[in-house]
Image (cartoon, rainbow, N blue to C red; front, side):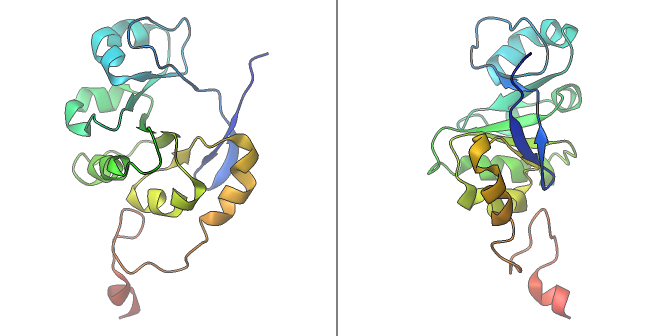
Length: 164
């Protein structure tokens, strides 16, 4: 049986059968893979013929590279964090939600920390592929703050409007 890692998705720990495929030149032999943007753009039809496929954006690949058709056909969009100091992925999630009106799953993959989850959710992320042993503790970090002043994807009204 294939090892099924757990992820956090919509505020719960769930089993997940998606694998990240980091090779831009060769096709994976099965579905349920999250492939690099370059492979998606070069081999989209061949990938989709295998079944559900998602794509990931590297930290230097903006959602502007995605067509509406891409957003429709990909199972979901992942954003790869190469190192936790790189904040561009936060902007990509916001851009997908606010400018592209993307309603699907946006998954964080790569090197990010549970301290960032609260802000990731505010920017529009809906699932998080963290190392499995951290998941229980990570789930608690969504409650790090009870109120946020600024408007965001998960709470469009700023605090002063909610208090009025």
